[in-house]
Image (cartoon, rainbow, N blue to C red; front, side, top):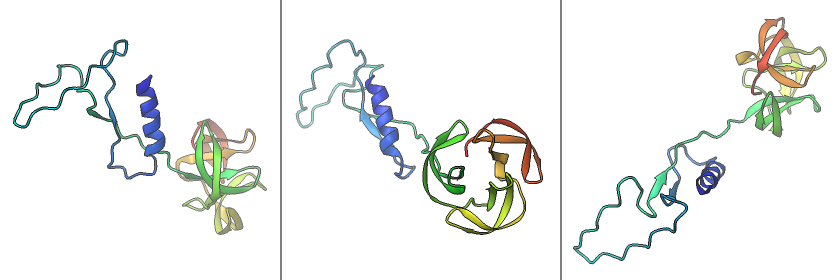
Length: 170
């Protein structure tokens, strides 16, 4: 149980720090059902300490946790606002936490008026002020106005999707 809590804490606290850092936590006792071994007495100068028992980490020795990437914010369409916002947390075809207004990097945006994707020639605060030609977003992950979720589009046609597939990340 301690390991699960330690990993969760490392993931929560680890986001936003440089990728080359690793969190270190004290190792859990080898047998959680028994009391932890008594701390070793400090060695005299020049004395040699015995190695830790094989198969178990030394008490208090740091354990390196694997690097787990933090979610990368994306730019997602918010149907209620009819505009694009930074998606800070999402999954299963939806964004759960929206941030500041944004414009997708390729400027291919969903037009709620005709439910198609178009190139945006001029955007402001997450909304398109001037539409251009039809387009398809990179990766073909498209907003489906029928269910309000993002799906992989299996058949793109004129800025719209004729056949939606599996859910995808906005």
